[in-house]
Length: 64
Length: 128
Image (tube, rainbow over all chains, first blue to last red; front, side):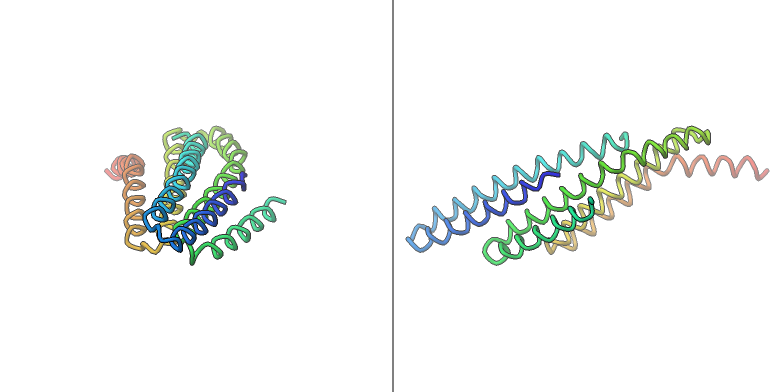
């Protein structure tokens, strides 16, 4: 059970939220958008690897 | 105690999701997905011993391998479908969740057709 991933995603979320706020305040909306997008993509990569892990474990468990 | 671990993970993840919800809803959603996956993988590894026992009994009772694997496949499809549908519903997409569940039902029916055919064969044999 790797709980680290949950904390990692929460940390990425908080950091991107702070960056978003700072960049928005300094008037760089496009950079803020980019940071948001990058955060979402990074998190999505983690989630996808975990989902494939789940499918593999189910497949080996039930001999599909 | 495993259940304590799981409950603690769930509470901490719920707290993190609530913290992130108003600032970044997509991250809160990712946290809920990952928490579900972590708990699911953790629990499904525990099923291993149960599966070996079930297989042992099936071999003892001379049950056809086809039927046993079909049942296992149906259980697996049901688990995965439920998981995906719950995640979709959690994200507020009830329509997609309903479609996922529908697909799961159809696939289970497709897998169960050979058993139905065998049952029909037996009935036709019995009834002259």
